[in-house]
Length: 524
Image 1 (tube, rainbow, N blue to C red):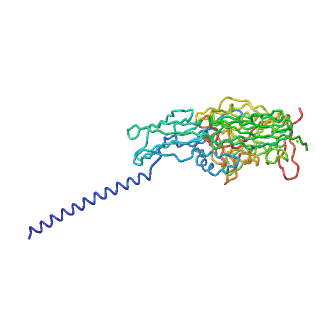
Image 2 (image 1 turned 120 degrees about the vertical axis):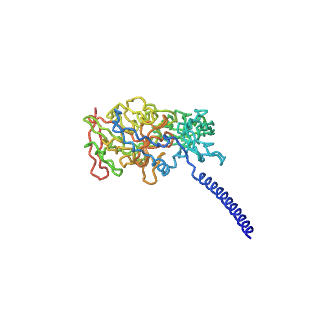
Image 3 (image 1 turned 90 degrees about the horizontal axis):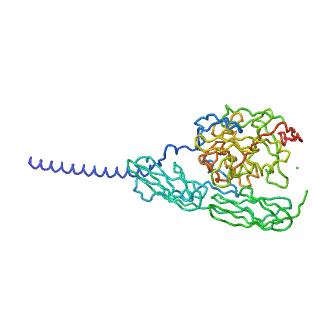
């Protein structure tokens, strides 16, 4: 009997051991599957430490628009999160091309789902735009990451994996790094496309002695160049105004304008029919702003404003040009610094996607030629001083501000629009002091406004993270130095120094319509 009991006990022990072993193996299998599932759901995009920076926090403020001196800015004053939200909510006009999305599709990763490391496999980008190579790892953080482009004329790559599309074509970028002691390399196929070219009008009617502008635009890409040729210059002539064409009626009749656009080596030809008809005739108490040293985000700019010059603003050419309203940023013994109250026109700071500085950009030439001639009389131009302009280098990105220039009209720098003495909040964060509205004319001719706050973005002349880029002010009044030429046509806010000895102030009529004085220029 005792023998039978021992046998039964021994058999029971064996069964219990077998059950425990099975349970252990089953639990191990379940944990492994759970771990793999959790790892796949929590993949991280690893970047080098420097990649986390969106816009520089060490740019300096307090510099004069003419002398370029600098002082340190609070490192925490970085306009980061506003960049994407601002771009996403911009209401782009029907005349404007939306270049905010660089590629057609989301970056395609390596198709091997079991691989512990994935790197963007293909990118399709329009010329003049950017995208990024992403690295995903579930088994550690990649180290010593490098990127090499096979053909930088088509696409170049920065140290943080940002790809800059230069011209139409295909190339490869090799991404190399070490992971857990193992060296790895991955190939990313890059396709750069050119955009679709359009001209704002196929037919134009002008009077003798008058002019009309036609605009050549490219959807998503960036123009490398554009030319305009008239087949009958005795009737109508045409000249380039940046990438736009200015058609002038010479004599009654018809002519054809040939528009030839180059987009990353792809040539498109358009024809515009012109009809010229006969001409039918039917022309200060100020002070420095309130210092913004202690301003909050909600405090608005406070100071004097004056009218000087004229420019089309209500988009109704039949009633003539409207007076330009200016903020008075600084008053000296013999001069005053003015900045336009509104975005008068929307243009690229440089019309072609190539390296530039303030000295070489196309906007500087336009402001000091076309804009001067359109906005001011010969007498008024004499009252606008030739200013010695210094554009500081970017201490954060290492990009150069370029040579000093002598200009009558210019854009402010990042330091200028963070200068409390000029009435601006002293950091790069959102501020009402820097918020800007554009005119109806600017809005209807390529501009846009933010759907939420009704504001627009505007260019600065300061360099940004690359020689092809420029600093920028968002609709929230935050400043960034990552946005670039070619993104879209954004607002231009001219600045000028006026000779106070050459002017006199005309008080506004007591109609309640205009409450600011006019600048009249004395006869020399």
